[in-house]
Structure formats: C-alpha cells, structure tokens
Image (cartoon, rainbow, N blue to C red):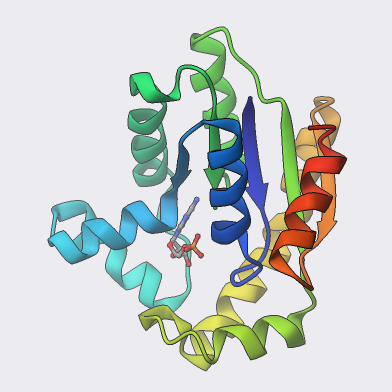
Length: 184
Ligand code: AMP
C-alpha cells in the first residue's frame, strides 16, 4: 500500500504512522525525522533546513522533494510506503505525483488525523523538542492550517481516498479506527 499520513504537528502522525507501517510491513518515511537526523549529522542539507525548522516554517520544496525521491527510489519502498509529514504543499504533492507516475504507481489512501488546536498546544508544550517552543508551535499550526485544505482538495480532485480520523484518545483505539476506515 502507498499511504500518506497528514495532521497538525503533535497529532500523533509519528506514533500512528509507525504502528500502521509496521502492521503493513512497509517503511515509514518521515521528512521531519530525516531533516532532524541531517541536522544532528551537520550535513549541508541539515544546515540549510535548520533555520526554517527552528522558525516553524516549511523547508523549501526542492530540498524536500530530493529527500522523498531518494526514499522512494530505495528498494525497501517497492512494496509500498507510508509518508509522514509530506507533502505539505501542493507543489510537493505535484512533485510526488510525478515521482510515482515515473514508477507507474499511485497513492492508495490518505490518513488525515485531526486534533483540536488547544489539545495540540497542551501536547507540544510538554514534548520539549527544539522546535516545540510556544511561538514556533503556533507558527507551525498556522502554516499547517493554511496548507491543509488545498492539499486535501488536490487529492479529492484526483479521486484519492481520504480517511479522516479523530486523533484524540487511546493510541490503540485510534489505530483500530484507522485500520477499520482503511478496510484493513
Ligand atoms: P515534522 O516533524 O513533520 O512536524 O517536521 C518538523 C519540521 O521539519 C517542520 O516544521 C518543517 O520545518 C520541516 N518539514 C518537515 N517535513 C516538511 C515538508 N514536507 N515540507 C517542508 N518542511 C518540512
């Protein structure tokens, strides 16, 4: 299966995405995790991404598409994959469509995790990651709020199945909900 998991920062995309990917036996590629690793490793890409990440802004599309192109070209992605935190812009969605088209593939579904803003603020202000400062969280939420609808519209217009799940409550219950909605 080829899946995307979307949701605001702190919605549990990582947790739910990991559980889902493990169950399906497919890799999970998180652009946020890859960027954070690049930052820790001090690579040129990490250095370029740093200022955007720390400000809660989006890293430029060409950098992100480079990361995803590499992840999808890997043979472990052949049977399918779950992308977490990507695409975040219509340009990225367009880039992904082209990457998949080149390989004769298409997306099967999108999991859209929703969590109210006040719950997100509560979760993230206790998580303690570098980009989890109050101001940065607010900016990340704002950016997500602005980009979400055009992205969902992009996929709805192309007939991709969108599965909307409330990301509040017990982790296993949310996962069960996702599996059920995906008919798995
Ligand atoms: P995340 O862990 O997915 O919330 O990502 C953390 C940060 O990495 C984001 O706030 C962005 O600065 C950057 N980032 C991750 N994925 C993307 C993406 N698809 N497009 C642009 N920036 C991204």
